[in-house]
Amino acid sequence: MITKISKVLVANRGEIALRVMRSCRELGIKSVAVYSDVDRTSMHVRYADQAYHIGPAASAESYLNIDKIIEVAKQSKSDAIHPGYGFLSENAEFSRRCKEEGIIFIGPTPEVISTMGDKITARQTMIDGGVPVVPGTKENLDDDDNALQVIREIGLPVMIKASAGGGGKGMRMVDKEENILSALRAAKSEARSAFGDDSVYVEKYISSPHHIEFQILGDQHGNVIHLCERECSVQRRHQKVVEETPSPLMTPEFRAKMGDAAVAAAKAVNYYGAGTIEFLADNDHNFYFLEMNTRLQVEHPITERTTGYDLVKQQILIAEGKELNIKQEDVFQFGHAIECRIYAEDTDNNFMPSPGLITHITEPMGLGVRTDGYVYEGYEIPIHYDPMISKLIIWARTREEAIERMRRALYEYKITGVKTSIKFLERIMDCREFREGTYDTHFIQNNEEFLLADDEAKQQFEDLAIVTAFLDYHHKLKNVQVDQSAAASSRWKDFGRRRSVYRSSEN
Image (cartoon, rainbow, N blue to C red):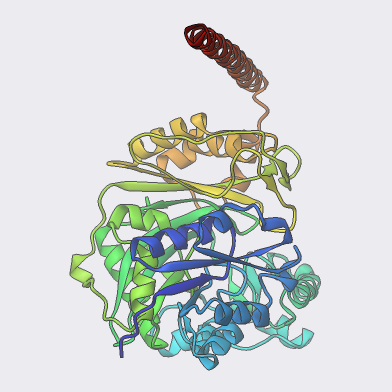
């Protein structure tokens, strides 16, 4: 059954809310924004066809408030809700509530979200579906003696992971037996604090791993395809920083093998919508299922850029009940794309968030440059949410050209008023290991000295350039004001002369 969607409430904020709204506009679908107290002047609020206040700054009282968002969806007469990523995007209860209220949830079923959101259940589901997984446990480690026995059987090093986890929370690497119990307790404590669930499991630690994910699309009629891979190994504290596609590790044969496994993983849970199957791969082209993200990923634009398909539009069409309009044989990649995540953070101060007022912003432009952001001059970045303020996406015909274009675009990207990660990202583009495509998930750790080096001369030059540009701007502004004042004075004098002539003629 096909249900035409005419209005979508975007249950998110920032750049992803804007991203979804743009595709809605192209499809002729109206969009509804929701916002907290500190987001009243945010760009997604300005862009949407309608906007509704949903509470104070705290996420728990606004963007995570299921009752309030459902209430606004009904009040605005929205047919569907798009959750973006983060917040409620992988919340099975939210998906279930939408279904109960007769609102289309643009994403998978609550059952699939529950199954794949629990890492232990997901591992077992993949094993049953014939998808290779990292050797490890299938159940929660709730006993110290059992944990010691299991880890000894698997063999060190291992990764202890939160079953309900994500974003690196509740995760510990153990390479010494005397550290097992302390790491286990720390992981459980962090998992309980972050997710309200202290269940953990253990996986064999893969040395020199590559984090490679496959974008999948599935419809409600059993059709599933993949749209190739993304290399996500540039990570800091298990958070992605730079992504690219195609992966430097990939060969056509390896892509076909991993792509088939990704499709099999999606079919194992009758998945529909856009999703991501994440794998760990080694340099010998062995790969293992890591997890499934039942939502749109932050890095989805690089797939869009190399395949030409709008993933948000595909999500909406699938949610309407339509069959996929893409066949696997239609999918091919053209050129190379890289995404850099721009954070408002102080890289010289342990990457501390840097909220505050943006006094100036110049975004890069030119061939193959795309910026997905939400900030503007005069906007005050709040401290309450993730510090990512934009994504810089570059496309070029080759990887080498894409890196050079990214270097140029990062050089052009100027933001003042807050500290950003732009200089850090420039360093990544300059790093030999990245340029050669030989990096793995230890890249930042292995190159920390180079990436965080204080290039004082370069910084002073760029500071001088910014000051010069600022002074030039004010000089031009002053001249414009003087010219306008003179023009206004001239107009009044001319008006006065004409008025005198008019009066003289009357007399």
